[in-house]
Image (cartoon, rainbow, N blue to C red):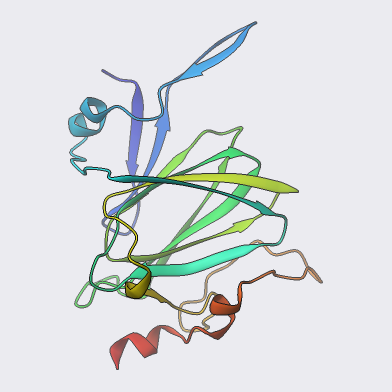
Length: 183
């Protein structure tokens, strides 16, 4: 009990989670997930898949989602630092098209829970970053969707340094804006 602090974000369905860190001169111990702690805060998701990626500075991954098999994601950074973003794409939601971003790092040990119904992405701010996430549904490659990371209608304020090259995958380069989801 009391091993995590859960802060609901301005957009319903998004939560910043801060685990309690037990440290001394030897280092630290942190419990990164405990179903009972999550249930105590009303978070009753079930995770079925864990993923991990490594990216270098300037890489932007996203904004991704699954169409018919939406995933909830509990994300965190094992090394380095990223700016993590979720965009509400739930049709009929009062916050549709709004975004929330949070800095996640190995140092701050914050986690971010993104409920199903959001597009998700992150931008690497450190030289490299190792990113880990638990998913509430399996990845279905044929069900993948995305929206443009720099869609002016959404207006995400990415922490990109002036003159810095943003490194995108080919698929992330061709995604359309959020209006494409209404077609």
